[in-house]
Length: 421
Ligand SMILES: [Zn+2]
Ligand SMILES: [Zn+2]
Image 1 (cartoon, rainbow, N blue to C red):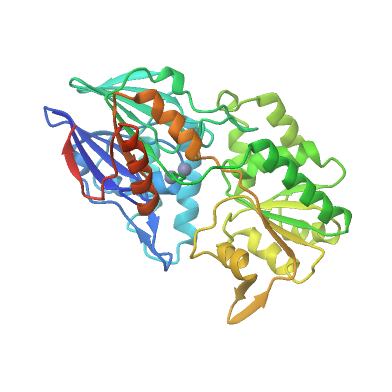
Image 2 (image 1 turned 90 degrees about the vertical axis):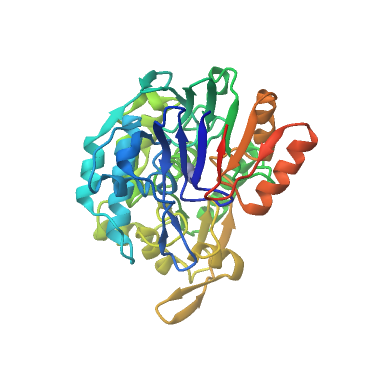
């Protein structure tokens, strides 16, 4: 029997951590991420003893998948299997978290460096043997470098999707679902279990129309965006559709954009990407930051939910003029400044509560499957047991009920859940 234990992401979106144990007692860890509570305090998955693990597979660089991995390197060394791009991006995001976290983190840069030294770089389509596990890595289409993992152990074939997107974007090819083959168990994310994303072309068209309206009236546009993936996706749209105005990219999005340029094989169209990179201007300091605000322009900058970063500086400069706009391009979690601006039109500056006079918009440039894509994906695996993780409790349970009506064997385990597959 193969054992499955949910150490994190059971009925929650965040701190992903899945443990598999073979008949002979060998253990493989899939992701080990961090979550944040309502006070923005880091929350970690259930404990696992690193010396009991054969290795770790990291699906992608987002902190809700990699943010707790350095914890496993405080006293021990073990191999970390991931793409070299994910390793480099994780290094960037982990060090940034260490720098800006207002709370104590139970590891330091020493552990991040040790983690990086233990990376075993893998490629899309590659397979390897690790004790009784045979592991194959496939493109997940979620962010650059992201993987889905097929694990063969004892007599079971298990797919772990990580975060995935079956729809191609400007930046990435959709997930490689065609290479998965027949599996007994699918452990999959269901972030948008109840929600259908609008068509990508429509989102892109409406976004461009809005941005141009603002610029043509003499306003400036701030697009708060996650550093990895989303910022570059918006760079694509702006660079190709808005040739008349300057497009700036700031903060960690710049560093992430430069890292991506070193990995042509992970991008859908590398030549196009390099053209885009040439077209946008990188903001390289405070002088430039102040100077660019004098004329209509688009500024793409983290943090995506306005929790910090250069985006906050721009917000303070732009919020009071109704000609300007703040355009969100990702989900805003309820405890963030971005959410408050969308819901109430206000933000806090020290003790002051300020009203945002600038135009505020939101566009759904998701990098996850929506409900429709999740259903089409599950239909490929009618004989498999489906395990839903990385999902809101209500959404996950309702989605499972819907799938059961179609005769699927589905569960939505809670954190701590353990079972024989
Ligand atoms: Zn992710
Ligand atoms: Zn995630």
